[in-house]
Image (cartoon, rainbow, N blue to C red; front, side, top):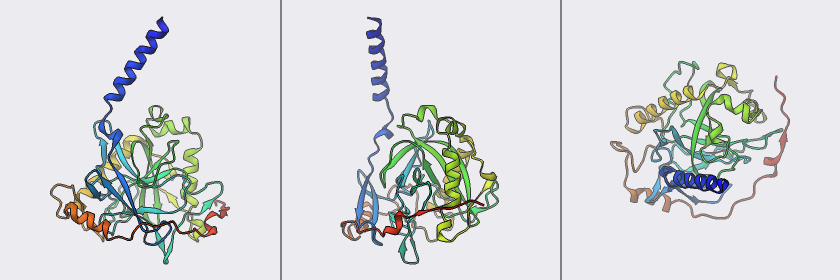
Length: 314
């Protein structure tokens, strides 16, 4: 009898919790694929319930500001190699594959890591200002939205908008530029309640932070580039520090989208940002998608992409 009452009480709590969950648990974002995957013309546009949007400018940074829950746009699902990224220069900022010397770019498999070892993406409405000298790293920003590595168990989908809790950050120094990597976890992940700061990561997921630093150090070596370096000797900074970094790059984005900072070739076209001189009509955004190449079957990937590279650190 007592056991049944306890179960009933728990069930009622779960129902109340579920029905009172914030709206961000069901965000209305979808993807629109255009062109052929594994080709130069492949694009992934993001749409809300009213049509195409810019994932950089029109998706709010916060899913729930009161509880510090952020939106994250997934560019690269875990275990994949294609270096997909928000296209900053094209109108509506679709996701596309990075190109180097006219060829699609794939991240090498540096043993024992296969592709990206977390879901990788960016926080919308952020911008690492290339004219700003960061006091903590001594280097300027990399002209991109701030990067996020999501460490939950689920392999996300390209173009998915995930809601995440920030745990900390590391500061990669990439070719002399500050390139923050925010460490976060999907709020719906079973481990999310147990992970509240970067110190919890090693306790619950031992070896992951070490693997993360190693991955970033060596992933460009197969391309003939030197080992990457980190600020703070690779130390992961805590949640509070990470929140301050995100707040700062959000302010830089506000200056960018309201034409208070030099855009540097970034398309700031948007359909939702109040007082932005770059705002366009919904119909114009739809025209951009309609005029892009029609979707098609994926092209084959060269076998070299699956090659293992054995890299030793100095």
